[in-house]
Length: 447
Image (cartoon, rainbow, N blue to C red):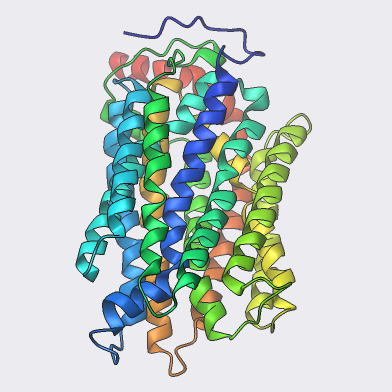
C-alpha cells in the first residue's frame, strides 16, 4: 500500500519536504553527536574502565579502538536488514524505532562499570543507527527532485561535521569537569532525551510516495537477488561506494584518534580554548563549509559536466591528501591550519557522493542501495581504521599515532582516484536508473 501524496512535477518538491528535511537534519545531528561523544571522552574512559585495573596494559589503544569498530560492525550489519524492511514497511516508523534504540543505548553507556558492558552498549547504538542510516536519504530523495538533490543532501549531511563537533565539545566539557573522576558519564546521559523526542516527532509525518520526485511508480515490494546484481552492474554505484569506503576509513581514524593525538602532543589552548574543544570547532566550521560548498559546486557544475558529482568529490579528496601529510609533520599551532584544509576537502564530497547513489539507483530499491553502500563502506572503512591505527601505534616503540595517519593519507588518495574514474559513467547511469530495473526484469523473464 503506497502513500496518498500525489506525485509532483519533477521540478518541484513534494508537499512537506522542508519540514521533513528539518526533522531529518536534527536527527542526523543527534546521530553524529552520539557517535563522536565517545571519541571525545576516550582517554577518560580508558582510565576509568581499563587502566584503573591494569595500569600497564600494553594494548589499551587497540581495545579503545575496538569500541568504535564494534559500533560500526553492528551498524553495517543492521543496515542491510533495515534497508530490506524499508522497501516494504513505512519508513518513518522504522526511523522512529532506530532513533529510540540508539538514544536509550547511548544513555545506558554512561551507566556501565566494565569495558565489555560499554562494548555491548555501543553495539546497540550501531543497531539503532543501522535502522536510520539507509532509510533517511531515501525519504529525502522522494521529497526532492534531481535538480536540487545535491544541495539537499549537503544540508542533510552537514550534520556529520557539525554533529561530530558538538559531540567533541559536549564530551570535552564533561570530561573537563572532573579529570580524576567519572564526569565523562554525563556526556552520555544528556544525549538520550533529545533523541527520544525526535523519535516521537518522526511518527507525525506522512511518507512521500516512492519515486515521487522522479515521477516514477515505485510501490513497496520485496527485493530480489537480481536487484543486488543490478547494483553491482552499475559502475557509478560501485565506484562511488569504493571511494566512500576509502574516505570513511580516513574520517573514522581521524575522528576517533584526534583527541588522544592532541593530548600526546601537549597541544596548548588556542584562543583560550582547550585543544579538544578547539578541534571540535575546526571540524564544525571546516566540515560545514566544505559540505555545503561541495553540494552547491556539484549542482552548479552538473549543467556543464555530466560527471560533476564525481569530479568535485575526486578533486576535493586529492587536495586533502597533501594537507593531511603536512599536518602530520607540522607542529602546533601551525598544524591547525592544515587540519582545517584537510577536514574541509574531506567533507567536500559528502553531498555529491550521496547524490550519486540516489540518482543511479531505482527508487524501489533505493533503501537497499544505501544499505549495501553502508555495509561496504564501513566494513572496508571506519570499522577497521580505528583499530588498525591503534594497533600500529601500540607496535611503534614511541606509541606514536603518526605512522597510522600516513596509512590513512594513502587511502584518501585511492578514494580520490576512484571517484575521478567514475565521472565517465555518471550521465549514462543516471539516465538509465528510472527504467533499468523494469528492463532488467523483462530481459530476465524473456531469457
